Image (cartoon, rainbow, N blue to C red; front, side):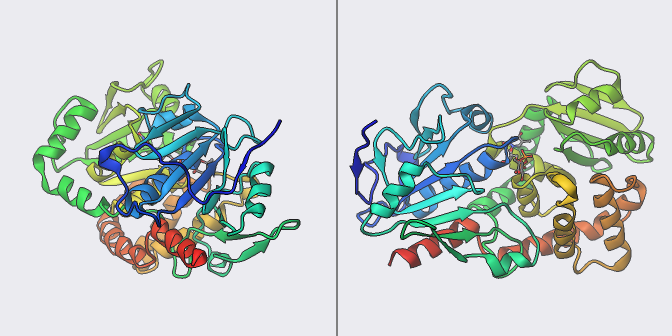
Length: 409
Ligand code: TRH
């Protein structure tokens, strides 16, 4: 097949809605291609979609997002039409990356090229990158890890074995010297508005559960997790506990366990069930921006993977992490590294209880709700302080944009 090489630095004008016209769209607008292969679940596309929007809306970049699984994407972004090869959504040009060699109908090379999570760029695209007079900035956006080694490897270059190109590793992280994690400029203000407004919270509860918010005596818990045998212990402890627990469960991989516990065929969005002190609601899986208010409406959040783990930290509420399991327990040092950051300033007893609880939730031991719950006020205070600490590392999109610009000079 003949390939047309356009050695242009910019994408053609991307159609953008007025609301999403880039802040700094002018001659210096940077074109960025972001490639995302969905391995499973929603984290790969969740991170890429968030980053793409931030680069477009907050930095004025012209962003093209190549995604191989539009159905997974559509769950987070219902405005997307999964049958279309190319479309503009919220000022981002979305390309269905329908086969590994596909690089758009016309080959154009951007100023900044991001391969997410070591996905492989189309060979024809890499060859064309090498042809460009002004070489693009090529970044491999890695998975988030809180481990210390990340800071040593962040922004290290790796020369291409055949072409005169270098790729830089961009490592998200929780500590200084890393790329940080994604945080939109408007996030704190949106949370503050939600927390301040009784009406906003009441409207949210009505939409999510069909009823009013529970009283202050209830502990509200959101539960987003993979299948997890420890959930049965927790459901029993919540049911038999002395204080009311309101459980909010977005429909997903843990829903089957809830259905079994309540003796129902399914626990689908709109269902609710009560046993003892436990009142559980199944919620619809929302558009990505709709997930944050669930975290803000809860006293404690169970989160998983990468993106919801980050959102829970910005929600500044206590949280429990179900880390993405890897072969040979390779995920456990990552879990402990996150605990070391998050638990750093906690007194010994709450710190040890936090560690035991997180470990039990990740397959090591049995969760003890009473022990964990007695320390919730410590965790709530720490969650606030930690969000401020994490903010010092800077937002990933801003850090990435800053680095890319420094390379383009
Ligand atoms: O879906 P995940 O388990 O994704 C995982 C991890 O990213 C993991 O690191 C990766 O290796 C693996 O995928 C392939 O969890 P995560 O990262 O929290 O992504 C979930 C996304 O779903 C997040 O962007 C929030 C979003 N979400 C909604 O948009 N609506 C919802 O109702 C809920 C519950 C989540």
